[in-house]
Image: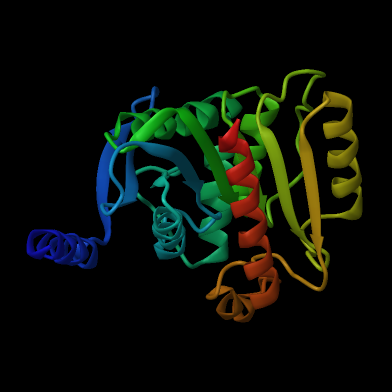
Length: 261
């Protein structure tokens, strides 16, 4: 009895000491671009677990993108916030953000290569179950993960939060292999009603396993608690606590279902 009690106390102590582990990991895209990933996992969990890639907003790989990797780690995933700009570059200036985004997205093949480099890095982590991968993205990152789904990148699922929906390359019938969840704010001035309608029609034509959630009153950037400060810089974004929490719960259900297959 005494030994069982001692074992239980030791296990409880180990659990109490467990925490989310994080590290920055340098990696390189196929074109030679030097990138920096931010990796997070819960060391209280033994063995491998599904992996989730996080793609940042147009601001770049900042603290917010990293916080979402930690949040995912807290849910039990192996999570990597990837770098689409190079060298972990980020900014709080809208003009710089626009410039960075345009440069990163100008070449669709290069953007895909940078995304895939991040996926490969996540697969290499010993905590990752490489056969079970998904991706989530915010703002520009939402467009990135949607584009990866459109191009048939082999993922279990992708989730776009207040992402750009327009594209110049529509998904062909049967091309979308990943499940798709789009969390969109009904008051998002950066996405037109036509963009929404065209995405819905595109996903239906493609035969995708697709869900679209319209969050009442939510503006662009609704998941980011720091979004409101950018209003002074002329960016029509705002945090919406209700939409943030609802969309995160939607994502959890979605990933549970996607990884259960």
